[in-house]
Image (cartoon, rainbow, N blue to C red; front, side, top):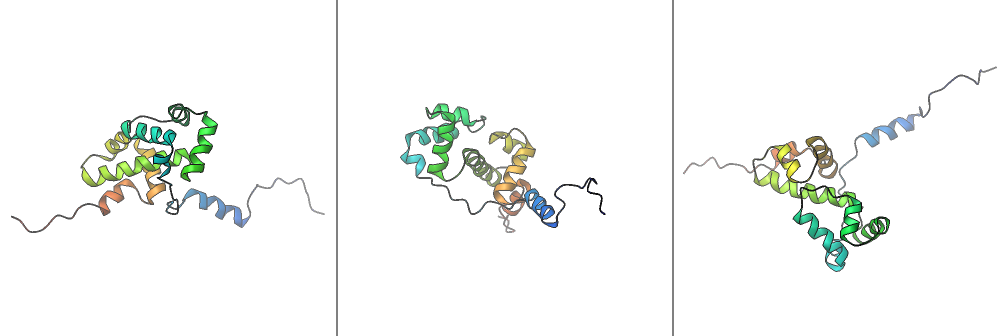
Amino acid sequence: MRNLNVARPLNTSPDSKSEQSRHLKAPARKDVRINWKAFRYYPQLNKVYFYVSEHPQESLTLQKAAGIAAMARNYFSVFFHRNTGVTFKYWVDLYRVKRAIGLLRSSNMQIIEVALDCGFADATTFTRTFRRIKGLSPREFRRRNKPRQSSIQH
């Protein structure tokens, strides 16, 4: 007769481990499509877009964005997702990463300077977000996209 009172670890099936490891290293989200026309069509979204573009270094919460759009927070969240195809948080991260890409390509700013200039609180958050969206770290992105210098001297 088996002892049924023996403590067993939870979720130790082979599938649960692969499920856990899959969440640890998520691939870049290349399949996401944003309806950018929504920012022109809806004045509420246009106000939020304008605010983010004018204040890229500021932290922007869903509550603050809803206030800019003159909507309740929950309604704004649903409205934003329904009309753009992405969550507000993902859109803010994407906007900041696109801004960072421009700075990484065109300047010699340090990674932390780029992170702070784009509104990230620290380099760790910036690197994690950049990797989630682009699939590689900011340092690796800069290395791969560095303009090649001509070997011809004038």
